Image (tube, rainbow, N blue to C red):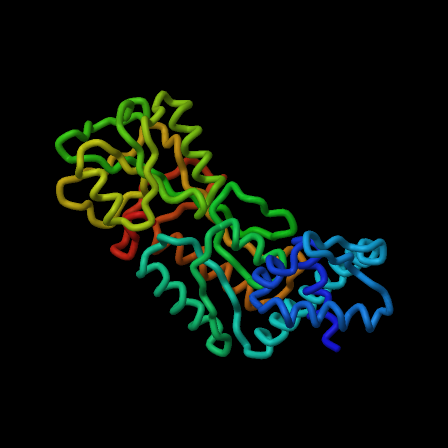
Amino acid sequence: MNLVGHLRCFVAVAEELHFGRAAERLGMAQPPLSQRIRRLETELGVTLFDRSSRRVVPTPAGRLLLDDARELLALADRVHTLGDRVRQSADGALRAGIPAGLGGGVVAALIAAFRARRPAVRLDLREIATGRQAAALADGTLDAGVLRHPTDTRGLALGPMLGQRIGALLPAADAPADLRLGDLAGRDLVLFPRDEAPGSHDEWLAACRRDGYDPPAVHTARRAEFALGLVLSGTAVALVPEPAAIPPGTAWRALAGDPIVWRTSCAWRADGADPAVADFAAVATAVLRTEAGMTPLGAGPLRRVEFRPSSGFLA
């Protein structure tokens, strides 16, 4: 008997209190589900559910089994995750996450630099939002990542914190030489989606409101073309790093006092000791500095840098 599979069926029925809904949740037909429950009851020698035409209710034995079944299923999931990690290690791959919007040139430079440092290790690079990266690092499905801060980093080790100054992209005809956040009052705001980096998203909005800019509406843009269209409409401003090439009809202005800085660092499990992970962190930090124009934080104020053409519009 497939005990784990039968326990999954049992837990689904116990939580849904309905065979039809449980079957739909499990992606199977109802008759095979009923058969599995009956086989489990036969194997254990107890009745797990009181069944009637109107309801399905766990018996005292079913309620007693439910908590243990959930623990066993969680353990089974952890074992499968461990198996994935072992297979990845045997494949010689290093699994690393990066945030969206770094730009194609930055990604290419990162892959090339890591290949030069570790030619025998395949880099499995994935574009993953910061929150999901942190969770994947914690459960071992990622070996290393590039995170936007602030985010939950419990159990993780961090590389050097890098900063990237954020300015405003606005129509060229309406771009003052000196710009403060408060000068943007009355305009809609264009930002990256909150699910990409919730901590940064909330931190930027708080900085705007603290400095006198409470946007009437906040639009999210996953693609640079959409953000550019909103800016060119004349009703919105986008907060972005300095583009490698300023789009026609627009101007990018630094914000006085640098009230918003995009903080980024490499991360890995604090209990990890893989030299390939350390090499990835070192390579990624160097590439983010040379190709994305990021500068170390904690060693003085941000300085202006010359951005290379690989920097993305929303990078």
